[in-house]
Image (cartoon, rainbow, N blue to C red):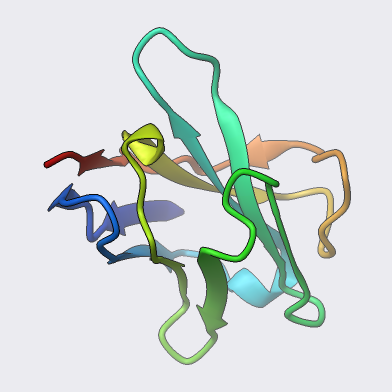
Length: 125
């Protein structure tokens, strides 16, 4: 059974940092591209970042570029999202998912599967 579990969220002040984890079981992450999404109350789901299982290349939404860093630890079968210089507008539930059609990140995703339960990130003073 495939399972993704996100963790690492919490309450942080503006300018602070958090590191989110997406731990996978039941599949090898390096066979897929893995994406982080977020959804704030009343807003549509937003793609935040992607990492390619094929070569580790990554991409970011303009809203987080230069502040967030995605990485993959194949030994731990875990993807991380390091979030620095957090802003109140980063407040959302963050989810990870596997694109089971694409091993490499591209502008558009394919079929997303194995969503985790999400982890809440709140940026507030």
